[in-house]
Length: 313
Image (cartoon, rainbow, N blue to C red; front, side, top):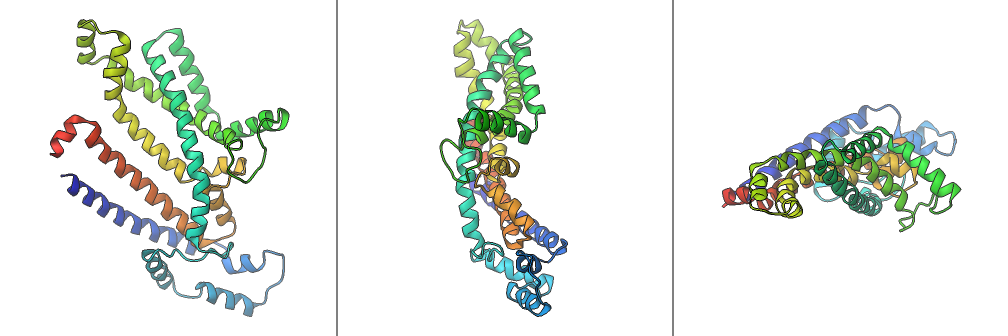
């Protein structure tokens, strides 16, 4: 059953990837602006039509749309996403360069999110309608209402410019430089997670097995951590998987604000330069990451939920 589910997921992913890649190629093809002209005129120089036509031919932009797409798709199947117009290097290499920074940022952010949202969400649920609950809900409402770029700029001004604790603009992956961007993302994401954790735990605390555990004389701490938490973890894994996919896709705004060398920052620059191969490779990368993580989350249910594990066998 697990094998059948895996084959079904892979088939769906393949169809989705073909559709996403074709749509992305259509949009880049129809987008205004000539990549060859932007590439040659980057230094405010006047380029002859002959040079422009020659460059378009070298880049393959003079061929019909379907021919361009088939050539690109054929290269992708062989692990070749083409050459970046602006960087003059393979798209795969550029994506790997940006992925290192994005992966590091995502990992640290997820750790911060779990450290903030789980304790506060559980604390809010346990003290339902108490002052603790209202305090946490108010703080989470404020956090989710603040734009991430604004919060990032405030952090840069206070902790970077005024206090000098962290670098303001340093395009390198460092332990000191990752604190502010990851904390900015974590505060925004935790504001959403706290509400979800609170809701899930409130639902579980009202279940019959909790009433039975209390009747047997178990302590509230034992009920909460040994019984409620394992049952509440499944819906939280779904949210966590979506967040990881979002982070690995590159959080462009935050990476731009903090000059973080990630895949989102790279994608914004590619769009401004009309670097179509890099844009198409980036979109394909995001699609693969999202679908792979969703598939892993679905498969993890079988091992985390005993009922689903029994059905699978």
